[in-house]
View 1: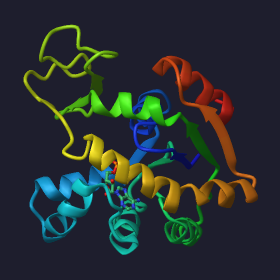
View 2 (view 1 turned 30 degrees about the vertical axis):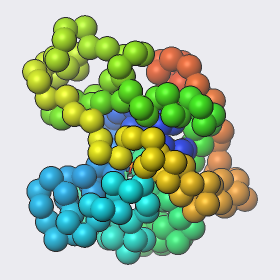
View 3 (view 1 turned 90 degrees about the horizontal axis):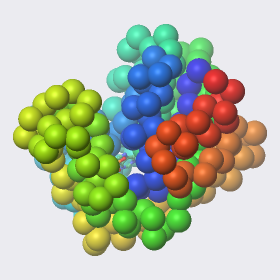
View 4 (view 1 turned 180 degrees about the vertical axis):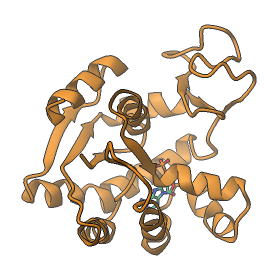
Length: 215
Ligand code: AMP
């Protein structure tokens, strides 16, 4: 099964993708993670996108479509979770073509609905483990042992994203409403959209997503 997790920044797409990877053996394809990895390894493309990402604007369709195209050949017998992709109608069309060319289908699009106030609160306290990507929060999800990841045990590896600040968040939200939210209508018209309440405990949201997917 191939699915898209669609929602504004801070909706919990990454967190829920990790759950689906662990629980269902799916493969997460996060264009945000791929772009951050390109920056960390200092590639030309990574340098090219750094300022755009820090501002909270969207990277060009060409770059992100290229990143996804490279990954679609990887072995993913449990199916792909597209996390943070597509973010524009052009990307959605490209994904449909890429899947078609591989004889694959898109099975569902989960729209995670979270109101803007909750997004600001979630994003402004967010940090993650640099080793395994597990996500934490200053007030709502603190590791059991200080500076130690509950998931993989890494010590002193926590990091915060450069774009998790109020100004970038405003730009990211604007990009979501302007460029990405038209995808809701696009997938609704195709009969693929499933809407899930993204507010509440991680487990509760995971249960809603599983129910929406018939898992
Ligand atoms: P994310 O981790 O999904 O929040 O993405 C972080 C940043 O990477 C975004 O604010 C964009 O600058 C860039 N980005 C990630 N995915 C895409 C995409 N599909 N299209 C354009 N830009 C993207």
